[in-house]
Image (tube, rainbow, N blue to C red):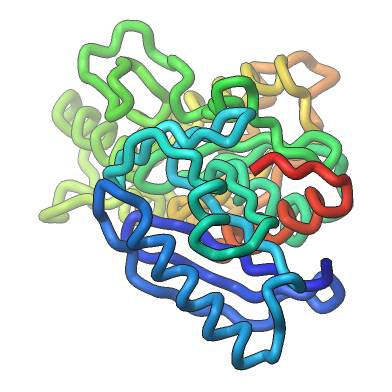
Length: 320
């Protein structure tokens, strides 16, 4: 198989890309995401785009595969265990897509895990054997790639670093229903919550106090400028991130740590702070692990979906 479609299903839009095994990304585009309890209309929208592209390129269905990212956990046997942001229940999304597309090579995996594979294959992880990726955005996503393979786990939750418990004394609930998750502190919204708590509990002057509404970007921008309170807050968040990454590394021990998502635009400043805190929470011989910022940004999902298709067709693994 020389061509495939990478499809990244998000809560607002669906990113799509046509890929060649030889030349990589050929073209990309987006369509709106339908939010209905039945995934069929959304899959029909995707198929219309696939069919239109195939007709334009003079290609047949037998020439291609499709990789889909799913905004929820995917089990070993291909069951998508619901999607909070779209409203689906449990569904074998790959099998449903095959029926609608009339294409036999459709593969589905969790969006964060697929993004990690994208960075591993085409982005910051090129040349390494394994990586752990964190995406710091509205939530905290995670994915592990070992020897070119996404680590899924029996129930599809392997790599969910955002829902590891970082504070057992937290009283507020996370969106997942637990308390004390890393996501409650290190997501963009979590960082704002932490900042508001710090500002309430200290009289320390800060340029943050002049803002009507604080964002994670404001927090990191002020910290870069030397704002003392902003530095206190970002150091605290970085300590929690460093601890969570260290804990994950004790289990999977990847060669590289990649940090992506909107918050990662804070750049090397954020990366260095997290790496320093990681080093203080890990065995001495593990402290020099590679840290890198994600390179593919919002395209990591479509790149990873394409890499998944090509890898599975090459190895003959037809799990969907």
